[in-house]
Image 1 (tube, one colour):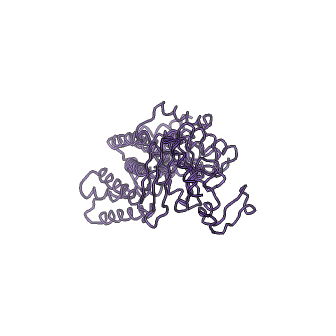
Image 2 (cartoon, rainbow over the protein chains, first blue to last red):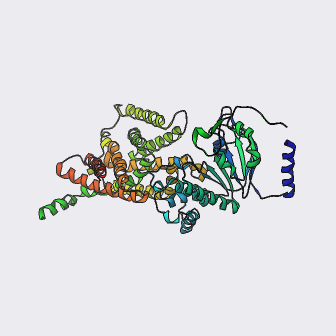
Image 3 (tube, each protein chain N blue to C red):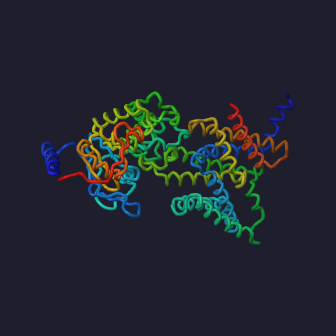
Length: 270
Length: 272
């Protein structure tokens, strides 16, 4: 079985020797905050047009991986190659809702990664930011205070900010948490479009069902458990190891009725 | 009616009242605008501490025979930089850093001030001398205020971004350290501008009071700043009237009016 999978990957590589350009290339990454390693053995590529889910429980290393990719944390081991500007879309729950900034103000913050902070912005940048808000469907709400928007709308404003950064690589931290169904669908559609335009997208999530709908999955549990296409990678064994052999929710996420406790065992026969 | 008009106009026939008002306009603009950032960066306590850090700086300058403004500037700038750097050390933390730096500096100032060699009149700098402001004081304040406003315009985008989301700021190119240093330096400048008239114990009223009031009624940063500056100037004028007719200390009257305005605005808002 193992051999078969290797061959499949080889065949893919042969039929398309170049492939779309690599935006992120991580090899043998290990990271620490000064103490023991909190993440190790991470090896994956993000290519233009790909949407990759970063799956794992809280504390599994998703945020650590993002911090490395954002250049905020230097890897302890391994190499990280990035070609293109990285835009980060944090969880909107963390933003201050009483803050006196409009959706346009927030989108314009993305200019800081391209234009020195002390340089006043011209009309061109405002137009660019308004266009970014139009891309996420919020052009008419540009002057609305950020805190007055719904959770899903705030999330899309933060995506617009990443677009204003002119980011080709997007890192989204649990973007569907707290968003209602229409907002989630809208955001998903937007991410599809951006991928279609050649962006590479990494989405941190702890939701297995969500992860199944993306192109590839990186499973993390303090180390990389697996990387590949969801239908190949998201096996019972991998999920057990990703979530530490604890609880995996099966089917519709509806609390205890659908949660199964999986004993930590191996049923893989090579 | 004629008597009322006279009562309104008469105080401004005095040069000392005109100069006091000019000083308050300058302090009101810079204090009101900067105060909005101070509130959203939760720096009110740091601002208060910076004002106190000015005192030992003034004492040292007086003892060394250097212009007081320079002494205050060095003291307050030194404190600003020490607070910003120490506050970023995780083991110390922002709150404790402010306390440690300011207490140390203030202790130094007190030791020097209590020496028999220290000149008289230093206590006046604790409470200011609004009615004793001179033309050259105003020119100096105007120069500093202009520089501070230009700096605030240049820093606006950065300050807005870091204040909005400090933890993710670096990810989109905003550097919190630069924002903190800029803000604390500008705060030091505002305190220096205001200390001549209001003294370093009352100058905070002009920085915190109007901005806190404006926050209750404005939801966007620029209108909030304009409103805060207007409140500070109006409060300054009202304080001067109070001082003129009730024969109260000018700086303290201004401070009381500004705090009372906030309390009334808060009550009015909660009643709405």
